[in-house]
Image (cartoon, rainbow, N blue to C red):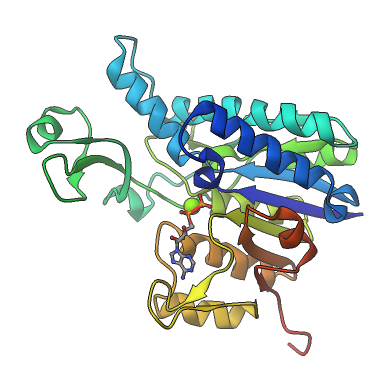
Length: 303
Ligand code: ADP
Ligand code: MG
């Protein structure tokens, strides 16, 4: 049986921002996945983003007079909320039981990413509000409220749950894991501790796909292709590309850091170890999974 990892974008899942809209997109995505032949004939792992959802959690923490929760706990909360929504929808439609797993992503505390936090998260502040915050903020936009909290975004070194994911797949279950890029943790002498960071789910999804020996890794996002000349008059979709070509485009800056670059880096890595990686639109998962649309990254047959 083939092993398939489908990584669903957090933005693509959030739709217009209401809970009902999110539930509808989750249900629609799950239903389409469940009736797609590439899914019914494969062992299935679903990972997902959480950008907008963890943003709401941060707003709530600020607005409510409740005890602070560190960022790693907020990520775990979105794994539970989005994971259980996905689980409920997939369970209704899929031909097998569905498990949702709280998943960690181990980071190296000496990663240079910790020296310069780059990832903006949560609400926007004025300069005065930003200065009063107990965390690092940075001016990331224009206008009165142009500051946001910024956190480091290191790459994970390991996802400790991959063996558990494999065991569940072997037991005939579908698995939802790696939500929001994983709960960020660092190793300590006694185990693990949470760290203040946000991990791109694209890297975590690659670790999971690699760790469970998946054959295909499919990123469902809000654009139908990775493009060259993205946003210019000369925009061209990439249809089928070998990983070495993807590396060249990455070096040339064709894919924006923080959005398409992590996906294409993950695709190149996965393809280099022999798998097939795809970036395609969440609007038509069936077409994406059957290979009709989307950017397919795979070693060329003669390499
Ligand atoms: P996800 O939640 O699926 O990870 P992201 O927002 O991180 O979504 O990544 C998808 C976004 O990447 C697109 O909406 C698009 O704006 C952006 N992007 C940047 N560079 C490119 C490119 N070269 N081709 C396509 N999309 C790109
Ligand atoms: Mg992303």
